[in-house]
Length: 429
Image (cartoon, rainbow, N blue to C red; front, side):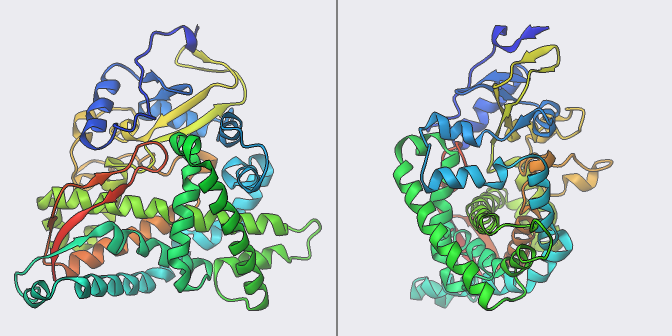
């Protein structure tokens, strides 16, 4: 049994700001060809599906949020309190209890009720995009005319903010603020941002705590059929001790509101980019908008906006004749793991193709993408995120007569949430 520190491993720096787009794809393909394990900046990177599943699911590992706090000197203040109370950092019975309170409201059946609202939001955003187009372009858009649009600003940013506001019971006019806070607070998972923008992250956390407390107070006075009201009802139960404390309620609101915006924005933008880059796939979706669900799953698999998910071992772990000591940080690479289409790690070559119909042609379909994680910390809002992307794609496939790139996409970094800074597209209705 070899110690992991004794192995000669290829190195990959996930903090390298130049690793984005095609360069990132090529680098990961080369890294995966060298084996299943690599050396990362803080620990090790698990590259294939089987190892990724193992480290995400093992009870001998937890999310290393407080280790991140230690590395970057976060020891007090709002950001420290948020990191300490984030559901990602809560484990054992408390984690099970908190998940059991939120899961029913975010189950596949429960989120179905938001489909009409999602359609309405997309309708309004498309109308605004067309209204903002130059006059000559609008005059032609009823025929074969094409209108230029920056998709991230016009659709990807506002859409998830509006959806999550509706789900939580927040005023829709607050959606831009929710996006601003989410974008900043998510940077706590980006090492580069934690090193250079910690003050901005701290400020966003402080402002959002004030907002969330006021929102919960408002819903206490005027409950509705929204997630916050449901959490308040759980908080006020007669059980002793209560199922949910006041502090836990505030932090669950914090987790859902912040976690449900920047992530969905980024995955939706990548999905539209991929469809614009693969016009034959866009044509398939136009011909059959019911393929929206398959298109979302293929996007989640092909370009995950969480390329790396970290775990820290709470005890020595032996895996594949390698010993990983307690305290070792392992980064699970969803990008390479998702290209192992079968649970046995096969079909890597097929995994490099973007094909929204591939699942229907494979016996049993493909293994589920690692993009939302796995195990007890599987993404809390995965069902909602899937549904809002499905509705967004189906709506656009039905309404747009054309979709193509109008310029080069501007990629964000792969550290933290991997999104697009801008996506210029050309469309017609």
